[in-house]
Every structure is written in C-alpha cells, then in structure tokens.
Length: 359
Image (cartoon, rainbow, N blue to C red; front, side, top):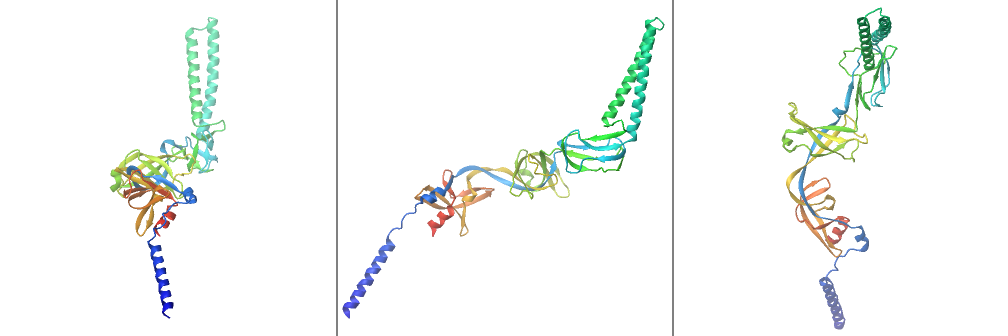
C-alpha cells in the first residue's frame, strides 16, 4: 500500500507545481484585431476656450421690418374676399373688393372733371381762332389756356386718388397685397360693412424668410448677455432640428411682473419651418474665460461612479484613463484632469475595449 500512496502524493505535487507555474506565467498582451481596428475611431484632445450656455424660453414672431398691415382706405360693403389666414399672396394680388359710396363720388367727380376739361379745351380753341382773326386779344387766349391747365390738374388729382383707392368704374375699391408674403391676420369677411376710419387692419402680411425669436432672460443672467451671441433654437415641432441665429437686439428694460428682460434672436427661415407663435428653447453660448482640454462627449465611459476614457497609443498599447469632467456642453466635454492636449482618445467601440482590458 505504501508505494501506491507515494505515487498519488507525487502526482498531486506535480499538479500543484504546474498550476503554480501557470498562475505565475505572464498574461498575453492585449492587441487589437484587424476587424476591431477597422471599426475604431479616435480623436485628438484639443485645448479650447471654456464656454457655457444659457437656456431661455422664447417664442417665434414675425420680423417687424418685413410685416405690413393693410387698412381699408374707403368705407363700404365687402363684396368679395380672396385671401384666407395662412395663405401665401404675391405683390399686387387682389385680397378683397369693397363696394364704396366714396369711390362712386370720386367717379362722379372724375366724369365731371373730364367734361369740364373738354369744355375748357374747346373754349381755348375758340379763343385762339378769334385771336388769329384779330377778333380777340391775347389776354383771352392766356385765360383760356390757364383754365385748361386747371382742369387738367383736377383730372390728374382725381385719377391719382382713385388709383390709390384701387377703384374701378363700377364704384369698387380693390384691396391688393403690398408685398409678397403670408397672411398672418385677417379681419374681413364677405358682407361686412367697413369704415374708412377703422383703426383695425383688414390683413396683416409678412415675409417669413427671416424670423425673430423673442426670449426672456432672468435678472440673474443679464450680465452674460451681449449682442452677437450665437444662438441655437429648438422647437417641439422639430425636436431633432437645430436652427441657428444670433442675438441682434437687447431690450434693456425689465418686465415689472416677471423680472425678466427680452432679447431678440434673428435667424434665417429658408425652409419656412418656423411659424409665428411657436414656442422655442433658446441656447445662448458664451465664453467663460480660460481654456481646458476637450474631447467628444461620446468618448466617455461611466463605470463605478467614475468617468473613463480609452487613450490610444497604438494597437498594442491602449490605456484606461480616469478623467474629471468639468462640464459637458452639447457633444463636447471639458476635461478638468486626466488628459492633456495631444492625447488621442477612442470615440467608437471604446466600451468593448474597456471591457476586454478591465475584466
């Protein structure tokens, strides 16, 4: 029995020795495979000025410099309305037709002025003929000519008035669009009685290729606002779309009720996506002073309540680096410690590499 136990003991000792040697053997160094390397993306750490953001609540409004309110020039009965709220109209397009007693009066005066001009012209011809035959003096010809000139001036005045009123020979006033744009307000309907002294516009037309966003600034943030600040605009209608503009006016007065100050952001609206009345979120970016290393925010790995990045040297040398994030601003992260300008971080597939190196 002794030789048998001796063999077993020697076998166990040999196994224990082999296990110990295996544990003490160095691990194989990590190296990226060709497939993983082809999927890898890296970006260099760049020092950039520290920027901050203000988030404001605003509202889309039309550009007042591209907006015209159309008032009725004459009173009367509205016979026809040819534009509706939200319609796009072109300059000179008929918006409404008003049957007007004022226009009828001017048409009557025009007809009378035309008759009086014809009579004055006839009298001038008679005076010239008499003067030629030595039967009248030159003074009579001059007086007749002045009468013709007076009637011509009166006729021109009446025609200009009727042109301003958009009148025709049927005693109608035609309301036309003064500019091309969208109808934002409509306060006229068929059959309505209008007064020429009405203070309300019948149409409001605006060009919307440029738009304003009016935003409210809290009193505590007023010190950060200045002209020319870049602005990012987001709306509920287009949550994935960012519209860009600049602050072009600061209203240096606080609303006594809300204790806020308004700022105006001007931006292009080439695709006409922004509509007056929309609510908007406004992000204003400004420099805070100083600079810090920056990386794409997508490069960060959050694990065990800490932030890490994978620093790339080459396919066989990749470090796991803990970093302190000062601020994330959009898709940029400011790094307070752990990185310096010139380092290269992995921005895609970094989580797979992190898991492989830190299991």
